Image 1 (cartoon, rainbow, N blue to C red):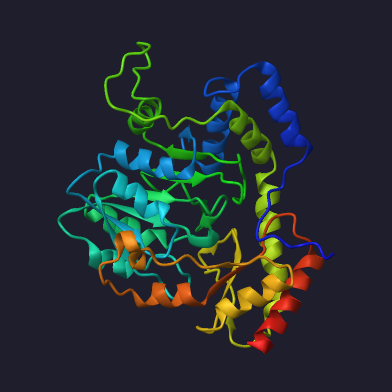
Image 2 (image 1 turned 180 degrees about the horizontal axis):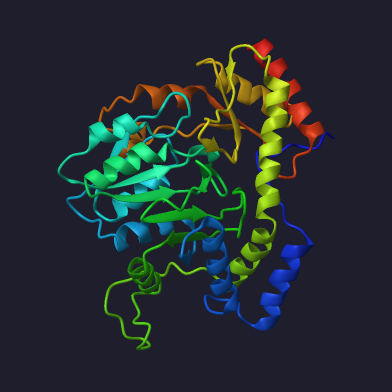
Length: 365
């Protein structure tokens, strides 16, 4: 029986086993201990931020950042529509209103011109998603945010190690949020991280993630907080992954290069972009097909044992957020987008098998 090719699978080996075993033997298995502090310190240093606050997953990292920045009822937060729903849900959890933005047709992240046009007197923050590993165009967005005194949150869940003008994403926002879910470039199984240069914000997030407990007075709670803590076992796994993060990022880029070489002459297909100012980490290697063709291709590849993914549905058309808004670029990208198997352990032979099967599926229509 032919081995199935998964859409994504983590690179976990002896290093991870050693770190996690060490954590188990130490007795630090919950939300305290040196592994968490070390992971926070090393990951924030890798990004180029002063502070790291580990969390139980990426969604709560976004919520924690929004609450710490004072976002709440009556506020509006600009959010790209073409992203995973967690980005909008985190805004909704605060009582604020997500305002959905269209995408840039060339690189699929939020369009800076749409950001500028969407600001109102109620806008308090912008959440920027570096979609599928490609950075947003940060300079024009940061310029308008500064001019309007808006908070900027980077959602870097899909973009570990990506760069904008030779500086890592996650180092631009007031707070930046990462996910370490099992399909991310580095993983802790579940898990997330907020990073920031602002000491006061970092301290506020540390208190809020631990039930609002006063750090100097045990079991005294000054505010209503959350249980958003990462476990020591997750942090141990993350430290092992962080040891090889540069190798994982470069592997992602080599996978993209191999796909690009195989697919460069394929008709009726737009390959994954990389703008001149960007270093993408290609969370998935994604392509655009003719609208109406994508779902048939997914089904045909599945029959050959190849797992792929459609692009996210634009959030503005999903039932919790649907109010008749039309965002044509996001809707077109969503209908045409296909993500190919891109886990770091995929072999060049498997990539060749994927692209051959994709060619057959395209000919069948």
